[in-house]
Image 1 (cartoon, rainbow, N blue to C red):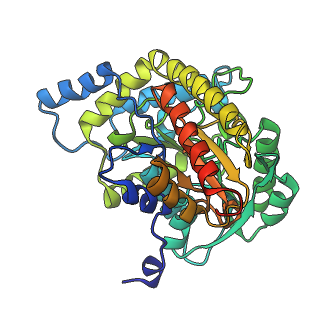
Image 2: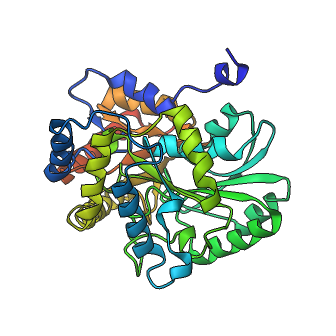
Length: 396
């Protein structure tokens, strides 16, 4: 076994969840998914595909119908009036989930020993995947100010040099909700053009955005980039289409990457299942019936949970601009994992530990507020409040 694999950290989120498995009394908010099922018409598309016998291999890069739907959707979002920057089908690859999309991009771009700069805190896969491939990861941390995490753009730009092969950035960010501005994206894109650095943008939460917007989503590098820029953008059907278990995603990349990417997909998964791709086509075609409703419900969930948390003594939290998480700090908490485990055991409350996402997030907890029952969030806050009163200050 390779040492890099032996050295991989097990998921701290899974470790907490495993502590609560089988307990029906636990209110679980640890995983990054809604508890609402996929819309019936999306499920029906998959059922129809299976009933028609579509149980065979597909093209490595995805069904033409799905690639066309993705290209149309992405162009409408990010280049509706600029034909030169349109996201055409030859720039789109369908993947078996967003996780696979990110790993494929890393495999395509990184050699052992390459330097990667990553913005943290971040979902741990984004820093573990380069390490699996033998790359060297340097991190530039966001900084918390009154519960909100912010970027020192100058620090990040200074960290990216001609030695930097890849910049990895996730915005809207899991777990903090931090979101890049268009101006920041422009500055990073210009700088990476000068240094020859690739950008891997994890934008799977772009639709889950609560700030001012003209195109219904968060700012994207695709709003600014030219087709031949060294930019790869990863997406997923999981979050904004309520399709986490379907394992369906996509990549947008420069046109000259598409043929090699098809070969790489062949050696990883061969192709995404046809029936899930048929479901993806319908999800995009009828996205106006899904995503806006999801976003408005998540906004209501956020606006219920965050003020309630902010009223608790010793809690530091700010309202996230994007994503589906409240990221908050407990005063006196020294070990996020230990606190999260105690919350499961002693309060029946399941949260993700902050140090799963970066060392600088020690003492923080992530609460996924994608609950179809807003009252579950209120119940959870009540359990946290009662537990804090019980344990008392200085005992976390």
